[in-house]
Length: 104
Image 1 (cartoon, rainbow, N blue to C red):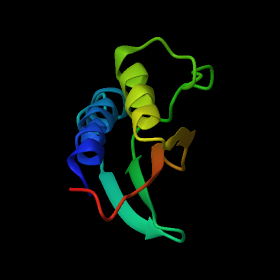
Image 2: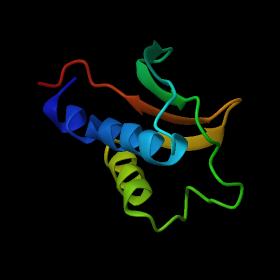
Image 3: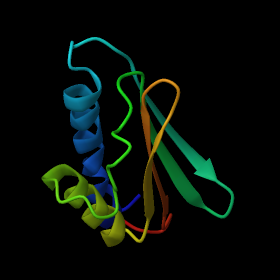
Image 4: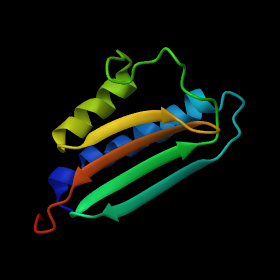
């Protein structure tokens, strides 16, 4: 993975911070990170927490919160797709993006 792709993947820190801040108001819970290579040379990054679900009225695609705006911007920068969904229990954030294996 080249530097141009690795740096924007720093949004992972933002997703973990959001999970800790919003998913675990009492400070306890579990966060699971999964990184997989998918067919076609893409990567799938999944951040799941066992905390509170995202509010039903939160539209991740139009939210004005700094964290979600940053994640959307970075996903766009690496030509990836980003979605957040409720899971049982908690919330799951998924990013899928292409990897140029020849990049340096």
